[in-house]
Image (tube, rainbow, N blue to C red; front, side, top):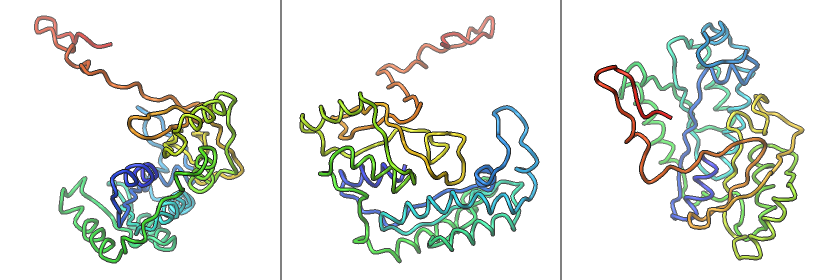
Length: 262
């Protein structure tokens, strides 16, 4: 989201952010540190509910990469450690130390889940301090719009994902040529890929290396003002209709059955 917000929305709107907030959890970093798989509906493994400093520390490499990525845009970075009831002080402190070492302005525990607004006060104050310490003129984009489409995609893959490069299918190559010849080559890029890894392999946790991003095709949203490469085996969400489906969902008061679901 930071990548698209900075490179697309801020470019179009003229906004110049001063701070980026990166939300981290102990459990997510344990997964990136080599923790066991998590499956919906199944109990969490004990590694996620009991203190395990080595797993947290190992997984912080993923957080560090996100901090480094955000700083490439010239903004301050505040890490919000979203606390769960099973997280320990030692685990959260390990995240804080790794964040500060990576160049974050601050790393603050946010416990709004348990304490409401009071639990997020420290985070809010940290963001205010980061903004006050930031020079808005330091904000910058990752790439120039006038660069070729291929170059812009490769820049994102290398600089943000840490890939060795990008490979384009024959269809994607044809689409690039079509867009550039039609005058749409100067649009920004919004890459569609798995959110579970920097690579296209959702199972590759932490900060994978030695991989390339495969671009299957490149679709256009000319009205919205961007191109979006489809990478790996990701599927996009279909657009919503003008008449939402929930209008047809109801309950049969006599039988109690839900009707209209599809």
